[in-house]
Length: 286
Ligand SMILES: [Zn+2]
Image (cartoon, rainbow, N blue to C red; front, side, top):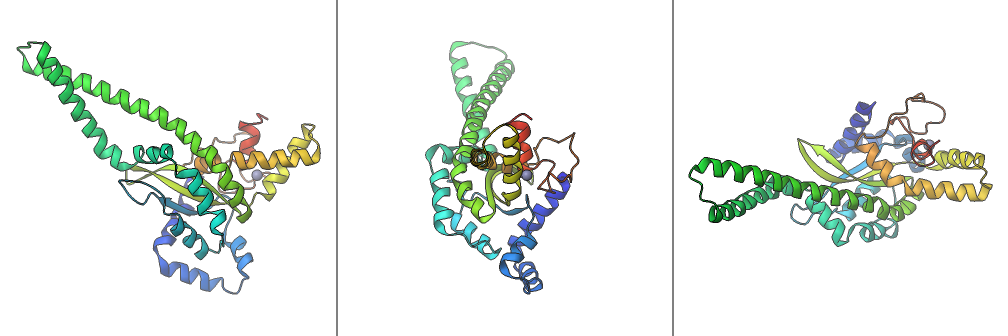
């Protein structure tokens, strides 16, 4: 099933680079009304856009380009619903630092540099205090200590990044609140391409209406009053939207073993678990 998502995502992302395909696609569907064409073309869970960070030295997402590309795909989103909330969510020092430490520049250049610097520091320190006759023994122990220290630093960075990663999901709640009106959800995920990991901003098509109805029914069964249940359901959908998108695009969604894939309850045919099902199993523990 993961392959299907991959194929579709590759389809969509390759469309971005291939102008002529888009033209053909648009001409073919030109008889359909724009609104219908949008729902006709997109299915829940399909990645509409995947954007990597633009610059290597100060990684950030080119949001105006994103909006232009979305507009080309039939999603007319005002700046107030896209750039403004996304800038508030992502343009903070902790997130910028996170983007940098997760960039391929850091992994391929900074990590080896870190190792060399630690190696030199440890070597010069040990050399001062120890009078080792066997030079290779000194080099070997220095290398081992350096490997240990570099790994420790990377592990610490990894854990602090995990925390910021969760922080990003929380920050994106406000953005998804606005984007869900345009039947879109946003998430930031690690993406491995050509053996290099990078962070990408994913925008996924998602019509929350079915999920909202299903989740409201579930909450009503849990003795919530109708209005209360609906408000709570909407809040849950928005809160877990970014986490869900992240897991969906990186194919890390838990498998639903006891539910058939295309069951009536699943509002997303491309993933093993729908957003409402994810909330039911992971949050409400049903
Ligand atoms: Zn659903």
